[in-house]
Image (cartoon, rainbow, N blue to C red; front, side):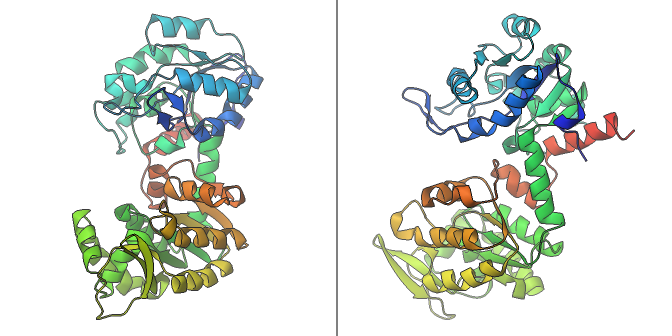
Length: 415
């Protein structure tokens, strides 16, 4: 259980609103190339402003050392455009300029404070694990001690950063109610249902290159019967294929170089326990001097070229399973979709997903980008705003931001 915006009257109240508007940028002129995350925040900000809240937005852009580690002035401009009202940019985070601006806000005002990652305590340590002492530790940072007296409520809508325990994400919750914004609320509710109460049959389609995360998801959803079947693609599939005894030649070297060698044994154990519920490709598309060549996989026959996609037979086989599903959760592309010769697997899987009658969920990151490229994004029931946060949630891990929201509910409601 957690607090939502329905639980309070925010009129005249000062709100610290943490969002994730970290966006791709053209570093030559610092213009925002994709405003998807900014547009996603619209409902929460608009609702609060219309209710008469005084809103100070906390956000980040990139991280130290990156070329797109910039001030948030372009984000304030884009937010103003999206909302159709002025969002004041404050080139300060907790100094006198910021605090004076917050203090003089009137009902409905919206200000965007400076990039929280400009402040060293936010990035001094990559806080990404949870224990009960975290809110107090982060509440003791200078940034939070300076800011908290100026606010009545802390609303967190930054689901994409929910796997972090940095000061701006959890510190204010030590002093005031922590409330889920509309993005956060929907993400938690949708992803929780896919894990705890999915309509059956429920299938997970897991691919991409981040095999360690995906295999943690596979463990969790099969152990808890959240998934009836798991369809594997990408590097994830290659690991399971090697676990089943296929000789993938240079593709095994790739897995070793990525630091995933130990996952082959994990895959073997999962196959031994859940073998009939884990599907692997029947054929693959190889990159032969830049051209697509599909080959059927056979034990005892060595694959001599890099695997860049699943093959047509696999696409057809997976399509049959997808069409029968009532719940579908997909994360990670089926291949190197950025190369048009190897887009087919990812594109066809996405088309099968939207043709199904299932409730459909896509994890953030590359697969959501592919869905936009293929033109089916608007036909997916829920596209998560978080890549790492989404997959860690599905893996059953504790996300610091969500733990703080639960803790706040216990403190302010359930006691």
